[in-house]
Image (spheres, rainbow, N blue to C red):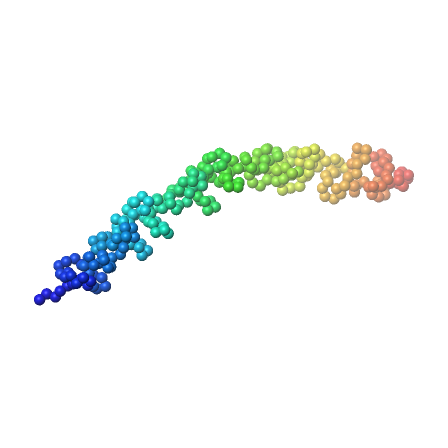
Length: 281
């Protein structure tokens, strides 16, 4: 006599019939759906013996129910996004729902598309444009002013200081002289055209000169030592009298060498004397 092979729950004979084994117990399909089957997260029906089951993070679906909550595309073999609200979405719909929006056109920046990220914001590559000329920045350098983005050329034209000499923008470096900005290469000696950016210089009649050219071409000659009076180095003070000039340290009595700066003196035959020596000569 053949031993009976019964369903663990309903005791129906399973000999020659389809059954499911769970925890080493045979169960008929009907009892399995009633007592053991997982419930589909989408349709809320049991996932029976004959259905293909999909699962993700302790949730279960019929294969036909595992689809995008927005476009209803089947996702059994496709990438998907599981949202915090429990919805399953395809990559495209998930990006539209939750993705970053372009700061230029305010449309969603879809995954895989060319984009630019700057200060935690995102743009389509073609939307990341200069505020002034409206051309895409792409791989070029750019600068910002407030929330606006500018290509280097437009930023220099609109905001950069203009060189006092050539009137062109100063994009970097430069120097200031008499409250005016200059390109380093524009700030040169009026005579020899040598750059004065990192050297001593002086000015005369609104022109600037290096020390050598000022001595040679501009500076007055001391009536005493015949050397240029430059205002540099020892003895920067000058004595002027009747069209002649002296270094202060050269303005001395011809006979006794007494310094006569800020004192009475006498001139005889282009020489200066203190009053006592003038009497003797």
